[in-house]
Structure formats: C-alpha cells, structure tokens
Length: 538
Image (cartoon, rainbow, N blue to C red; front, side, top):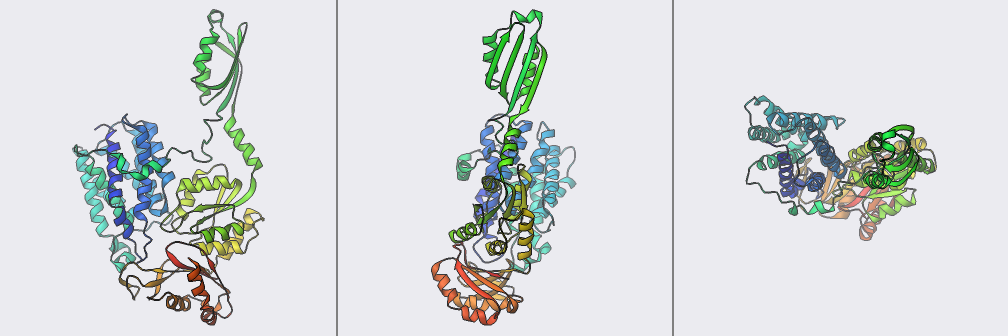
C-alpha cells in the first residue's frame, strides 16, 4: 500500500477516540466527575489532525513524521495524552525509514511505539496503556510472516489489544477493586480499532466533525527550538571574484530577482569583477551554491541571528521566575500575591497542554523557571516542557495539588536564588497531606465505604476515599480526624470553592481545632472546580 494510507489510519484512530471520548472520561476509578482520559487523548490526536490538514492530499514525506509528532506532543495534556504522544513518537518516526505501508513497516512502527511509550514513564505500571500496546504488538509479531497483509496485521493488533484490555484488572488491583477497565488502555484499543476500520475502502475522510481541530495550533513553534528563525535566520555576507567569462554576463537585475526566493534584506553591489552580497536567509548554503557558479569567494561570513537574538534575550532575563498551574480565580490571586510570575490556567479535568505551559514559561522570561504543576496529571506535561524548552532551565517541584503549591510558596523568599527556592519548596512539602471533598457521581463501595451518587466524599492524597455523607459539613467534620498525624499538624488550610462553603468551613473551626490543637486553622476561597474543598495538612 502507499504510505499515504497511513493518513487515513490516523484519522480513523482519532475518530474512534472522539466517538468514545465521554465513555473514556467516565471510566475513572473514583466516583468523582473529573475523568479526563478521553479529552486528553482527543487533544493529542487533534494535534496530529491539524498537521494532516496542512499536508492535504499530497503523499507523506519523511519530514512530515517529525511534524506529526510535534503536533501530538505540543497538544498533549494529562498523563494519558502525553503517553499517547510518546507512543506516536516511536510509531510515526519509524516510518521515516519506509516508503510503503505493509505488515513489515507497521510492525516496526508498533514496536518503536511500544519502546517509546515505556521509555517515557519513569516507573512503568502494568495493567495500563503500556501493557496493552505491548501485548498488542507482541500478538501481531507472533502471527507475522512474509504473507501477512496490512489488514491481517492490524486485525492481530486489535485482537491482542482487546484481549489485553480485558486482563488489566488482574494486573492493577485498584481496577479490580472498583470493577473498571483502565481508561488509557481502552483509549489505545479505540485508536487501533479506528486505524483498522480506516483500511476499508468505504471509510470516508471527513475532518469537519473534529470541532477541536480548528482551535489547535499544531504548527506553533516550540520555544527555544528554532523559534523566530523565519524572522531572523542567518546574516550571510560574501564577496565574489567573478570569473573572466562570467563578468560581462552577470545580470544584477536578474540575480536580485532570484534572491527574493532565498531571503530578504538583500544588498548587492557590483564593482568591476567583484560582487558584494548581503542577505538574511534560512538557507545560506543555497545562496552560496547560487553565487559560487559565478566565481570564487574572497570573503565569506555567516552569522546565526536567531542565536544572537536569544543570547541577547537571555542576558536581559531575570534569573528566576515561578510558574504555577491554577484552576480558580482565588488560587490565581493567591499565587500572584505570593510571587508567582505567570499562571497557566488548568487543573483537574482541564489539564494544561505542553504548548500552553511552554507559552506560559516563555512569558515568564527567566533563565531559571520553577514550575508548580499542582496536579499529578500535569507533572508529566511539565517534564515534556523541560525537554523542549532550550532557552531556559526548567525546574519542577512535583506538587500534586494547588494546596501543595500554596504550601511550597508560603515558606520561600521568591527573591532568593533558584537553588534556595527549589530546596525550600521541597522541604515545605515534606509530610504534607492533601484532602479533597467533592460530590460523588457514582454509587458503589469504595475502600469499604458505601457511597451513593450525590453523597459528599473525602479523598486523601488523591488516592484513598475516607468518608461519605449526604451533608457537606458533616463530611468535612468526619474527614479531618482520618488524616495521618493530624493531631500534631502545625497548620490546616481549607480552600473552599465559594463564599458559602467557606462560611460553612469557618463554622466548624472549633471542631477542627479540637482534633489538631497545635495547628493554625486558615480558610479562604480558592474558586477551584469540581471540589468543594481542597485541604492542606502540614
């Protein structure tokens, strides 16, 4: 098959994820309406689709695969989206070595995708996307021979992925406990199923249904990686001694016209048998080749104006700036008051993308940028920002909630060196517990706790459900005593979603004080979505 068929397969995979986006979102473990796997994977594929729109009907070229990956990476968000982008990295880039689509090239792609996905995770967990993509690839490999067709190979991929998905609860106890399949793994099954369906000749390509594609800027430059090259490029200067037989025929008007295709800021002066040229271009080697046919170079100078520009910017940057991810006007205001330079808007169920976080870091304009992800699903996104940002040094404080971000900021001098700030923030997070209270949207038994849809539930450290009650005040009262070491806490900070819930929290300060007598009790409005309360215990 022609390699261009791969475009249909990618569109088919994206369509299947989009069609099942809400189902994937609903497959979250906890009964809190904050599932976002489908949204995250859809955003990643939207970056791919935007590049495919730009490619249009022409055949795929080797350079397209880098662009397709960049589109996926920069629009990825959340752990599920970033891991999918890293699978796509291996899968797509492997096709740079092939000029046709067949079982062999697909096998190379799936093998590279599996390796890339595993390498992207510091501590791979089985029973997830990783297991399913690997076992799908292994199943297809076991049934691969020289007669295997493209369709047969993809059927083996889908069959292997589907069977692997069914086994995820056996590999990951928390899935078995809550009787769900892994949502990221299900997303991979959707991807490969859509890719298989797209091989059918009746499959129609219609990108108009992907509403999110229009808003995606997959072609955006990656800060620090060639950004601004089109504006600055290379300052190229040369003096040429014209050959005797070329001197009379050298046509300044024609040469000047030709040079418009090479760059701008052109200056061309002919003095006898010597010609002086000055031009700003992205391809100095092409300019050199063009003029070399007229004679020999007497003088040649090429300077990268982009690097010079970046060095100037770097010299003028402040030494350190803090960037925080925040979801809620209250938290945004608090973080700004505590010295945060720039806010990236996002959080639970609204994860910030790699591109958005890169732009925020760029706006912070510092040599050293300290990122507070403030959500466990954004830490991996921050790590990808560190990989792509080359004009500054990125430091990540692994805050898993906005409450942790607040505590990290509360004990630091933001005018100190980045080493001192980083050390103080990590120190401030030692022994911190984060509690979340929200209304459940599912009925079931979780960790032995009977939960009814509509109940308020408490989650400790984003992991353990500790209480359930139909009354918000009662839930908060029951929740506080369950926190490990709460009796010796020095502070309890309650961030309410609105004024009414803040007043309710204030009304039980006495009960909280009785549980942790040495603690300073503090409450304010965070304005966060989903959770009625975010509580920090330290």
